Image 1 (cartoon, rainbow, N blue to C red):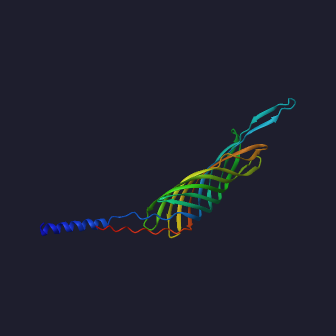
Image 2: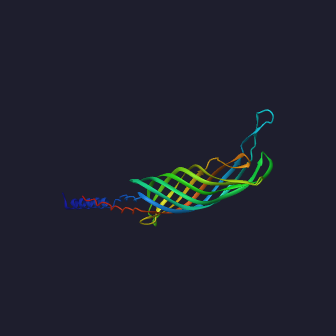
Image 3: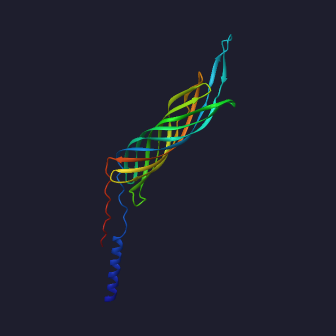
Length: 254
């Protein structure tokens, strides 16, 4: 082999070796596993509706009953804010993160509108969500850093139990009531690392608190109050397990 060919071959081998050393290797994902606590707050927008029930009255002299369907209907929008705290625990397998989170918030998500008896005797009515608690499962995936100034970003979905403190009122007879109602919630969001133990998150939840009887607009007829809400909030979490160090890229040698 000539000197010129040998030199060309050496240059080619060196180039391949240099290219091998410069191949980027995906850094190890952050350590999301373990317990965490957090604070958060945001806003809620939803709708509440009121509807009456069935009243069975005795029929004098016959021993039977007279059934009357008396419906007080009203629909109105809710809006306001909430703030509270959360606690959770994550498990991690590679870049997949799953766990459970519970939170409790003080809320003032309220509104009012017009109720009537099938178009008769319109009058004002309203209500609010005075508190909201959830217990949710979470499943997410660490997609790595999306913004240079932040760390890894976790994209997650969540869902589970929702419990709310509902208040509702009706002005026609000056009646009102409170109820702790259980329902469900589902949503998702993003969580990004800020430092060794801190992360910030943005999440959305759809909340349905069912249709419980809250008070009697015309005693003893129960007034059922249906409540749904869309909640958007931001939070700051402290993780008790420090993030794992980034694994260095291996050096490939020929």
